[in-house]
Image 1 (cartoon, rainbow, N blue to C red):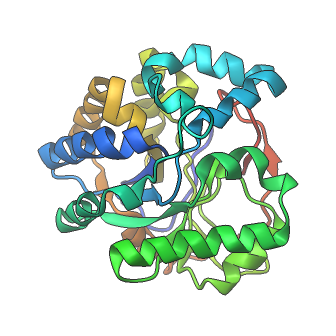
Image 2: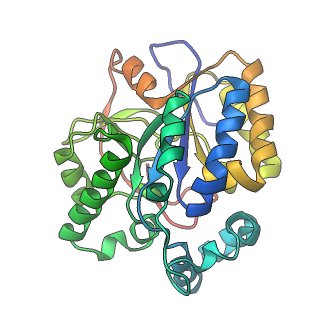
Image 3: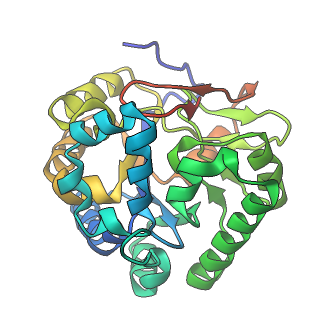
Length: 295
């Protein structure tokens, strides 16, 4: 087990970073997650994909990346995504994700959770970012944040990059959107992004699709026993879908531990009193993933 960060704040804190990547994850996964979190009286931060669900374009990754095929087989992707989702953006037109469910976005907020900006087009960012121009990235952010404002009636306070994928161009553009903090990496502890002076609250815990659900709960609980501040990446299509019972099992165990579950903005408030290191991200292929993430 890796050594845990030694934060000045000794309280044990868990953040739930809930990524909504797909139309079905928004339509079915989010309501179930809201029900689960209500049961435990826990609040999370929902990072919403605002625009089109182009999940069907992932078929291109099956051809280009053998690691992606292994991930799809390991996670039982046919059940996880469903046949219709696997065709969005190819044989079936892409439906809008959060923009299709304005009432559900308001329900998330009314139940005391946070809503932040995850993506405009999640699939194209995750698969094609490095091949697109600076202007494409600017337009992607503008479309996404405009859609967010339409839904939430304010600008987003945070950005969580799809697939934890960023580059130097991304950070330069991010700086102009005046986010209060980022959650774009899989680093082991919070830090300040070099050059743009923004707090990064990383997803340091593994997610179920990386560990496998059979050992995922015990793996995460074992890390939590070390104490400190942690963030768990949750996916609406997964923990709000076929892996819901495993997520409930995990939260039951967390509930019995000495942890406070807080939205990420509250964690940011606590971190502002700490002396965080300033670091530059780097890309690394971490266990259970098919492509490198920022760490």
